[in-house]
Length: 173
Image (cartoon, rainbow, N blue to C red; front, side):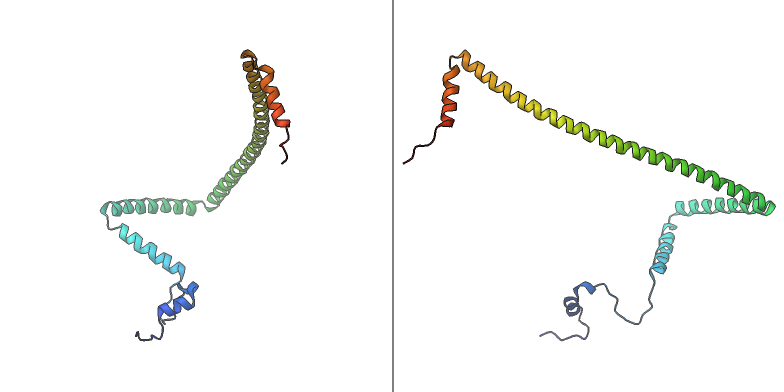
């Protein structure tokens, strides 16, 4: 006989099967999802730095970023209005290019949709043609059989007997 526990996980699982992942209020610190992701990224970054090649690459990247940011800061300090107008101009140019790309994408989409409709129509025509060809081939096959029968001297007897067999009614008893 097993002792009855106050918070038996097996009993709670059977009573509430969909609540298996709910946290129990243990009174411990609660960590939000964002904090957990940041901690995970920090731990992952530290583990990556265990490799000497990664450390050197990170140092070089940070040095390049520092000099790049320092250069931009100096440019902004020297001519803030000019830098602002330059950024605004770059944004306008980029938005114009984005608009062109959007138009091109729309045109390509419309062209593809039109081609798909054309292909569907062509496929339907091909299917109709194949069905007609199948019917024509069946007719040709029947004519070949008739020609064979004629050549062998069984011309009318076999076709007449076949058609007569189809028309006969079964005898009644």
